[in-house]
Amino acid sequence: MNDRLPHERGFHISWDQLHRDARALSWRLDGTEWRAILAVTRGGLVPAMIVARELDIRTIDTISVKSYKGVGAEAGQGELQVIKHPDPELMGDGAGILVIDDLVDSGRTLELIREMYPKAHFATVYAKPKGRPMVQTYVTEVSQDTWIFFPWDMALQYVQPFRGED
Image (cartoon, rainbow, N blue to C red):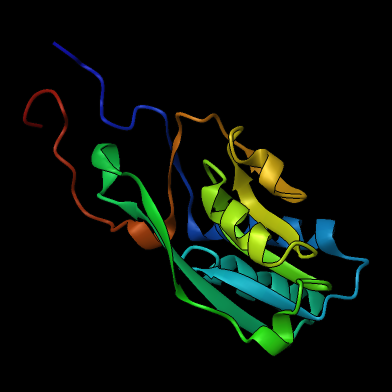
């Protein structure tokens, strides 16, 4: 019998914490004149907005790569599929472009984007060891077996204890 919760190594991120961490990412990225930000949707949208505000970057585009399937313990990565491409004239080979995502996990998504834009700078708020080589800049490293609970995935509600009824 397994008495462990499905995400025993859970890392819960509040909106306040995400904002602080995205601002910390901005501080690490300051000092370069970026032409634009490429936000990796969906998770990279909020950090990209915060970084854009902090660094006064007005041009933001998105790339949408679908890879995850399932939720929680059943989640996993499927085949990568780009379902929305950014403006090719803006992107070029990626020179001067800052690619922002919330998390690099396995690194597969960013590896695909790096193939498309080899001269871009890749930055995430959180990084796991497997994916860390895909980013030049990140704020917090978490273990590979940690599941990050982002604020947009959570709701405030009563939760039944896993042992007992109250």
